[in-house]
Length: 284
Image 1 (cartoon, one colour):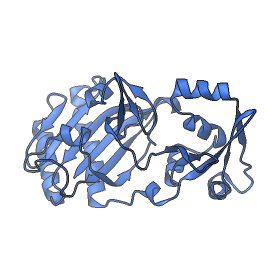
Image 2 (cartoon, helix red, strand yellow; image 1 turned 90 degrees about the vertical axis):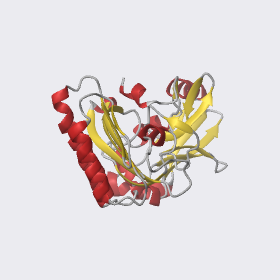
Image 3 (cartoon, helix red, strand yellow; image 1 turned 135 degrees about the vertical axis):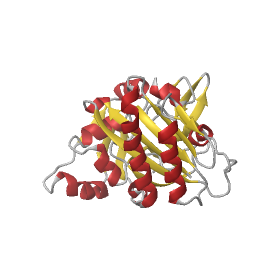
C-alpha cells in the first residue's frame, strides 16, 4: 500500500492551505520488493490503485509545502505502520529529505524555508492524517458519482458551452433554486489562444459557469467533464482513467505524464513540464 499526505497551498485563492491525503493499494501485480520497499519508486512509478482519499484543497494549481509518503505491503497491520512512523520521527528528522527503508518505507520532505525546530510538528500533522485515513478510510466520493457535464456546441460564430440539464438540477442544491446557469460563447481564435496559453480551458469554463462553487464542492459532486456534440469526451476533471507515468507538478496526480519530447505533458490538466515530476522539483 501507499499512503501519502501533502500540505498544499493554492496561490490562485490567496494561498488557501490544507492537507490532502491519499490511500492506494497494490495487490500482487506491482513489481515491488515488499520486504524492503523503496518509497521513491512506489510514489513516483507504482503508486497503486486509489481506494480512498481525504481532500481539503482540490487538485490543480497547488504548491506542495511538505509531504509524507508511507509504503508497506497491503496486509501490514496498522500497529506496524504506527511503530515505524514513531521510530522515524525519533531518528530521521535531522536532515531533509528524510528516508527510512525496511518493512515500512517512509519519506518526508518540506520546503527549504521550514526551520529544523518546526519539522516535528509538521511531520506530526501529516502523520496524523495518514494514520486516520488508514484507520477509517472513507469512500473516494467523487468516483462514485457521474461528473457534471458541460455540453459543447460549434457554430459559425465559434463555440458555446452550457451545463447539461442534469448538471443544472444537481448544482441547484449548491447554488440555490433560483440560480440561472449561464452560457459561454467563445470565438474560435480566443478559444485557441486560451488552449495554447493555459493548456486546457476547462478550469476557465468552470470558473465562469460556476463562479460561486468551490472546487472542493465540485469534487464532492463528481467533478466536471466537457462533451462534444458527437458525445466525445473533450476534457474532464479529475481524470478518471489517466494513463502515463511520472508525477504532474501542476495538478499533483501520479501516472499522468506522456512524453512530448523533450518535455512531458500531463493527461489530467494538459500542463507541459520539463521533467518527469520528481518530488525534489516540486518542492524547489
